[in-house]
Amino acid sequence: MKRRQITLADGRYLIFYTFDDEMPAPASAQEGGAVEQQQRREPPVETEREEKPRV
Amino acid sequence: MSELRWNPLLGEWLATATHRQQRTFLPPADFCPLCPTRAGGFPTEIPESTYDIVSFENKFPSLRSHPEPPAIESTELYPVRPSEGVCEVVVYTPNHTSSLAAEPVEQIDKLVRVWTDRFRELGALAFVRYVFIFENKGEAIGVTLHHPHGQIYAYPFVPPRLARELEQSKAHHEQKGRCLLCDVLAEERQISRRIVAENESFTAFIPFFARWPYETHVYSRRHFQALTDMTRDEQKNLASMLKTVLAAFDLLFNLSFPYMMVMHQRPVDGGAYDYYHFHIEFYPPLRSANRLKYLAGSETGAGMFINDTLPEEKAAELRSHVAPAVWKGEGR
Image 1 (tube, helix red, strand yellow):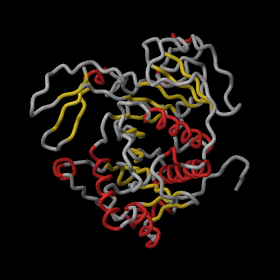
Image 2: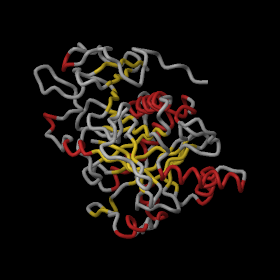
Image 3: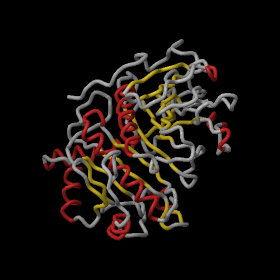
């Protein structure tokens, strides 16, 4: 599982979750007024990360 | 305008959120804010042309990570505090006309993993004490958007119903030395009449004490407290069990069955909750194809539910529609 966080025009965060290669490549994050990874608000997260293996 | 107000009669917080009066109410499909934003089309909440699963801060939240100060002052009798917390919307699929029940089990498995990530991340926030994952489905429940989605509330306190369940669980553990929900599960499995479905990791049943005609609980077979405690196999088995129960719901009356789905996990306040037990509860409001169970005087004013049906009979009815979830490549 991978995640990509963007900041919407009004400051809210939105996280896209994708899984392996099942998801088509995302379109431009600028569509619809999103500003990718600017003015990130809580909760802080990595831009993109792999799911950690479980113990 | 939003704030938390203390109810001294019940000893619990409630939220005012007057801005929620303005939220989008049952828009036509062409203007659904949870659909992808198509080229040249209506700009939705999700600014991309497709997605798999997304989670984002609710545009009309009851709780905010940076809340405004309360609009009214506290008194000794009536404490007031900022409505601190987080409200997220989790969109299950880009398909507007789908539902969690209609999604393939693989998509539900993805959702379980997203829920786990959200629980972990929101639970790590300093001001959050409880992460509540839920879904309201259907106009009978009062949904304002039909697009398949759920919600997450990250509360700055343990909500009262959860607090009561935790107290009961703790008292039982102190008295008997055993988990209350493990004992409930053992008794339900031993009696078996109220069991709806079962797999290696989860059991679904309509409990002895069901308040709603088709109230269905999904308990983990293994004793653990939260999504983050699950193995990968348990994640998949939870997806299978949810698919099985939701598909059976839809077959009951051949309609897209309305329900509230709530997930009960340990609080995230740093306390020790080893005595508690992860589970999911469904509260469907229908008592027949076209009749609703209303929360009337006794339920709302006194807190005593009156169930017009017998869980044993309703479990048999639901069980007759159960089919195992089928994963891609498994076949039947």
